[in-house]
Image (cartoon, rainbow, N blue to C red; front, side, top):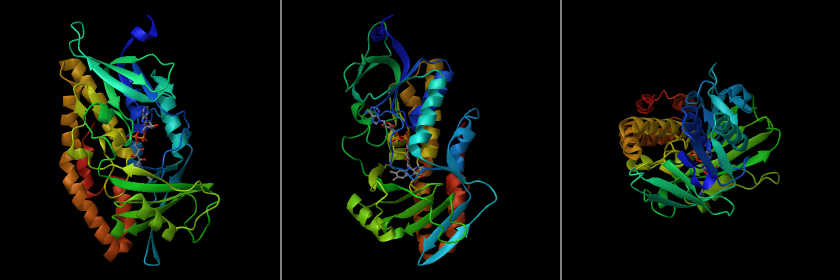
Length: 375
Ligand SMILES: Cc1cc2nc3c(=O)[nH]c(=O)nc-3n(C[C@H](O)[C@H](O)[C@H](O)COP(=O)(O)OP(=O)(O)OC[C@H]3O[C@@H](n4cnc5c(N)ncnc54)[C@H](O)[C@@H]3O)c2cc1C
């Protein structure tokens, strides 16, 4: 059959962490799966590069974590009012990675499961048509670049991040940047300066900035430092806060900003057989800006929704809405309240913060435990 006439079971837009995990699960389950990724990997993504213990635990057991280049995280330091507070548990709290290589590894993992990966192709158009032969409708995806025939699929997963097009083209999200937090980050290639014992590779240093509704960070890798600022203010004010915390570094690329969308739990994430996941669905954790855990979790939910749709004939988008509502919306108010509490705690009782942040990374905080029942 010519490629232009092929009907895929599933087309995924975006080969970031959410899209790669969804692709791996679907391909392994026998669904013909294609991933459209606008960049060629490895590609840069503004991010702290911290993969928490809970995010790691959401990855499939056969994904060899030992092959991911990264720094095991063992120390959390909170700097506040000229003082430092450390927490060093015996266990690993996560992995500090370079996102460009971590994401490439996950995308290769999906390819290994049988997903077709098309890199360097940007989604431009998305149409849905019903015919008598296909009463449930088929999606046609077209790319901005020439040379790729339109892709036809029964289901679509939008995993194209906070600036992606799937949400807009499907009518699930409004054009422009929806209300959200923002993060600014930069990687400085250097031997990490050892300022004090315990601040070497694998140390996460946080600088609470409650008035910005966020925090700054400096994460020590082996030969690099990932540093940045995240919060509720605009890029200009974040840059000011960034320069207050860190000196400008000639070896750095200069900080880049990116949205931190966290209001997704209040919105729908599916329509007919199109499902949004990860940042495209707006699922960043409001206190810490951590997005990878919910990116993985929503990928699993979308895969479960498609499996259920195949069994029942119901629309996968509706099943996904239901799964997202029970898994994300119910906990959202609690999480938001919890994050206000944590920001206030950082002001009055900073010594308790490193431990609280470790609890968050391991999904142990009371307001976060709600999130666990998802498999
Ligand atoms: C400054 C900053 C720091 C952060 N630090 C952390 C952290 O330390 N730990 C953590 O867990 N989270 C962190 N986050 C959040 C985290 O980066 C995101 O939640 C995560 O990347 C979401 O993954 P995703 O797969 O949903 O989207 P993305 O990683 O954004 O991937 C989307 C993919 O879709 C592709 N794409 C976009 N548009 C199109 C299109 N039209 N056609 C085809 N492909 C397209 C993109 O190229 C990209 O590869 C941070 C975010 C920011 C901004």
